[in-house]
Structures are given as C-alpha cells and as structure tokens.
Image 1 (tube, helix red, strand yellow):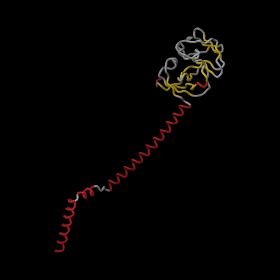
Image 2 (cartoon, one colour; image 1 turned 135 degrees about the vertical axis):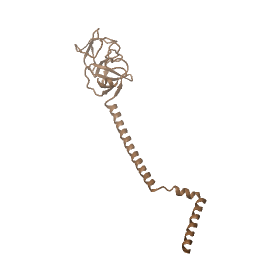
Image 3 (spheres, rainbow, N blue to C red; image 1 turned 90 degrees about the horizontal axis):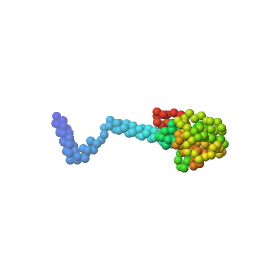
Image 4 (cartoon, rainbow, N blue to C red; image 1 turned 90 degrees about the vertical axis):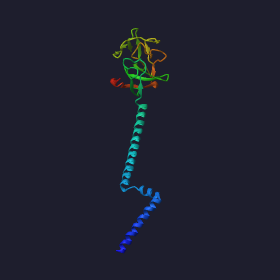
Length: 219
C-alpha cells in the first residue's frame, strides 16, 4: 500500500512540474499547438497536388491557345486577310463597317470584288475588265467590254461618274480595270489618278462577309 501511494504521489508531482514548466515557457505551448495533425497534413498534400495539376493544365491550355492564335494570325496575313469596309463606294453590295474575308491569288474574272493597295490605303472595287480588254462606258453609264455590254445586277443606278479617260480604253498587260458599285461617287480606274490596278497591288479577292451577323454570306 505504501508503495502504491508513493508511486501515485511521484506521478502527481511530475505532472505538476510539467504543468509548471509549460506555464513558465509559453513557447513550448505554441510549439505543441503548431504541430499539425495527420488529417491536416493529408488535406494539405491533396491541396498541393490539386494546385499543381491545375497549374499544369492551365499552362498547357495557354500554350495551345498561343499556338492557335499564332497560326490564325499567320493564316490571316498570308492567305485570308480580314478587311473592314470604309466609305460608300461599294454600296449596296458592301456597307461601311462591314468586315470581310479575302483570299489571296491572281485568278480574277469580271465581276469579282477585290481589295488592293493605293497610296498606303486598301481600296475595294469590282473587276470590270482584265489585261488587254477594251472598255467603253457610254454617257448613261452602261459598260461594254470588248464590244459587249456586261450585265451588272449588283448596281442600283448606272452612272458615267468621274472619269478623265478616253474611250474605248485598252487595259494594259498585268493590270485590271476596276470600278465601285456606287458608280456616281466611286473613284476608281475611270480616273488616271487611280488607273488600272497592277497585280502586285492586289491584296486578294473578297470571298465572304463575316460582320454584321445578319449579313453573313458570300460576297
């Protein structure tokens, strides 16, 4: 019995001393409290794994988007230039603010709508005649190519417009005679200032209107 009491008393004193030491040294309390549990460690491990996977997925997605954007820009620059229409020289076919896609190439025919460089600007007009063709425009604005009247269902009104050429006019080699669909206001190959368009000036043939959405379609 005496042995049991002595053992109990010794344990009680050790407990009191340990409590006293903890009270005297609060740092020990913080250290004990800051030791995370196994469950907390597992949650933190899962969180780190999730974040790492998310960052990896995000980096891969961004990389793919950058490549796709670069390819799209390259394609637009080399093969499918995107153009915005300014002015009214192509109404009613194209209106100011329309956005169109053009296709690079050199295979043009009468009736095609093309974009070309002129004085650091891009103009959009319709091909009327090609290299070596003879063009004649009467006072009413009716157009003849190689002696035959061309059918122009895209016009609202015919007009001779502003011209300083002598007709019949022969289109030089490797050049194209172009006119706007709004004949009374368009400045085009009917004037010497612009004249027939050289092949190296041509950006491409307009293929489709992509804006506004309610007018999407083939040009």
